[in-house]
Amino acid sequence: MSILHKIVADNIEEKRKEIGLSQEQLSLNSGLNKAYVGHIERLYKKPSLETLEKISKALNIKLIDLLGDC
Image: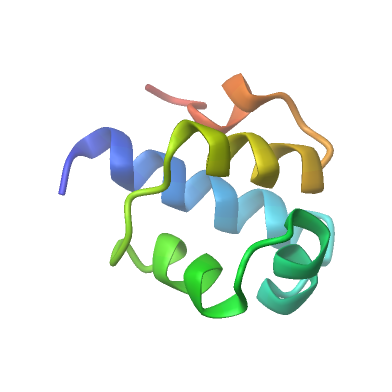
């Protein structure tokens, strides 16, 4: 696991919770599988750039915001 991977996963979870979305709601809004969203947040999967773009749109943030403290 890289530091970048952890930062992105943490930022996804933080932004999701900040706006009051469950993993299921995020998965529906992004078109991703609920289990996959959970795997990203728990660092089991490394999302592609395309996946991160879908997540950022579902969270109504810029893609760069997922990179936060990099």
